[in-house]
Length: 78
View 1 (cartoon, helix red, strand yellow):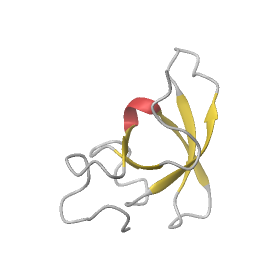
View 2: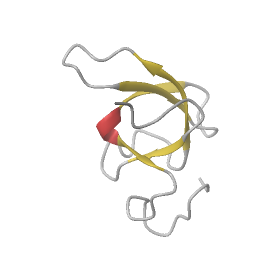
View 3: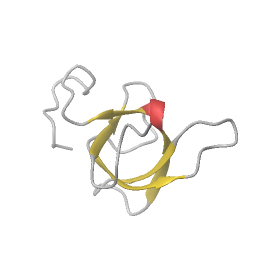
C-alpha cells in the first residue's frame, strides 16, 4: 500500500541524504515502480532545486508531521 500520492507534500527524514538535498518541503510528482529490492519509490521535487529526485518511501515523512520535521522549521517553509 502506498504511503504517498502525487501532490502530497513530504520531507526527507532527518539524516537521509543531508546535506546533499535541499531542505524543506518536496512535492510528490509521481509514484515509480518498486526498486529492484522491492522498496516503493517516488519522484519528488523541491522548488529550491532545478531537478527532481528519486526517493524511497522509507526516506520520506509527511510534511505536516511535526515530529519528523527539522528543528525550527515549520511545515511548508524551506
